[in-house]
Amino acid sequence: MATAALIESIHNGNLHRALPEHMYNDNLAQTFQDLQDSIPSVVKFDPYKHLKYYAEPEAQQEYLSTRTISMTELGLKTPTQVSEVGVSDSFPLFTDEAVAIMRSEILNKETFMKFSRFCFNSTSGMDCNIRGYVKNDDEISTPFVYEAWTHPKTMELVSKMAGVELEIIMDYEIAHVNISMKSSAAAEEELIKHSRNRAHSGDSNGDDIPGIVGWHHDSYPFVCVLMLSDTTNMIGGETTLRMGGEHKGKVVAVSGPKAGSAAVLQGRLIEHIAPTPLGMSERITMVTSYRAKDPSKNDDSVLSTVKPEINYGSRYNDFYSQWINYRVELMKQKLDLVNKSSRDENGKFQKEKTVQALQEIEAYLKKTYTEMEVSEEEWQRAAK
Image 1 (cartoon, rainbow, N blue to C red):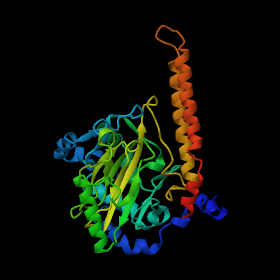
Image 2: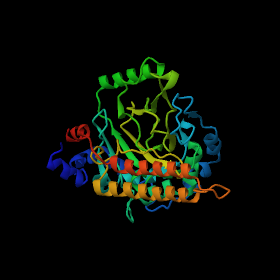
Image 3: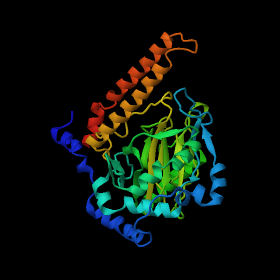
Image 4: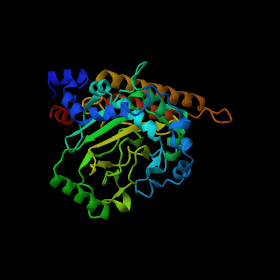
């Protein structure tokens, strides 16, 4: 069972897992200053200027020709999926200026020191994340990031690539940031490179791939992962997936990302890892999480990787209140659907269908509060 001190620390926003100031000063302060010197002081998001699809004509064909891998091809097709698209290769999303502005907003020292926490599932020990910083209640800390991800034009591009109309889970899950700061020795780098080569050649099941974020399923149905670092000299780092069915035991990697490019992934159903790259002093990615907008579609969200007792970047009061709000609002929509569809086209009441729909909502309600429960194993992990 957790100690009173640990519970208090979690309730206070996991400040015991905040990064020391010297890590920012040593690794990111100069990067932020360089950005400040190269971008305008105030820029409002403009989809025709900051989305590559609209700003750069050649990007349209690149977007339209992007490969997607289906759930069937991955051997992971299931009735609970919200789309047949399992994952996409990287596709052009934001322009260079948009990337620079986003980097500037998240690497601002005040924002970084307030919201960054050590990454709970890092396999290298030198990684952190920034969560729940974009918008809290009516306060928007990073206006460009907020507008960039929530604009209808952005939502349309992400949804089209995912094969289903999406909606952002909640404000807390807008533009979660993962930052990897490299300091490993040459021998360790060689081991990482060797492991990755084995995985890509088919000689590995993925267990030996060191990762920025270890092997995991996401807590939400879909994610869009955006690269914010220059990958010109990067070796590896491609998101790697575990396959199922007749391909069980094999792994597949999606195409390598470039700054401003993104990929969509039905991460709730696909186990994946972000391998530690070579040749980079930093790797910054931004992840926004989604569910299907249609309330009749499945929402199998869980809190296994994001609850505050596990994920240091989730602040207890802010996170749980948004979780409850999103779940309650979606249940209202589901109940409205039940009410509207209780009779068939001939006016006959559909008892069995209505009861089944209500039972599904009852299960969804129960899942809402049971996901907030913390197991003894999770408490032990939190105490480490």
